[in-house]
Length: 203
Image (cartoon, rainbow, N blue to C red; front, side, top):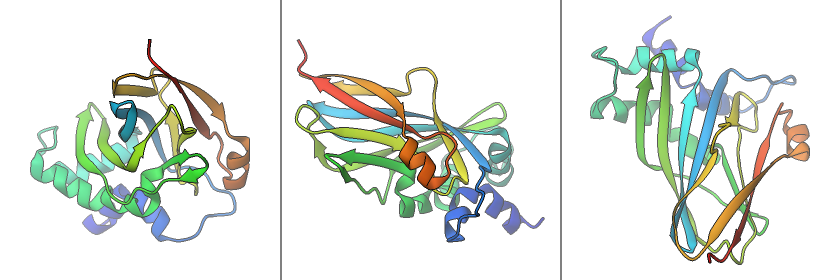
């Protein structure tokens, strides 16, 4: 396989969407374990910081193609190349992030503070999505799901602390995780976890 071919494999989360079609019997080729941190300013949510832990095969392709000096980590230049070639285009698909506020879905076309870390034979992406405008969880209904609606990528929430909170003041929140049967059936997704956010005033 040529270097270009390997790069396409490494960036398959972009490629699958570029193909523009979904097979009749979709099944995942990339696996992600995700966590999300809701970033507050006072009692309003202003962003979501995510961490994606990839499977060994996808990770191996990223390491092969982008760790140029083979030192087992990603320097600033290598990180920029990963962001450009195997992450940034996911803005076309809202970075697989589905946040609904009072039944209105938000859009995310760009991310910031991207980083990549190698942990043995796996890689972790970290990045922040800024909300189009702050959310008031005391007044608005909020749900969060992270999934690829082609099911080329399977994304599961981490078993421990899948959703966290940072910087909250004057508000106390907790989550309820449900399996969304309607979306799972519509997209042919094996498991689709939907997070409902419930908040009240902090004592």
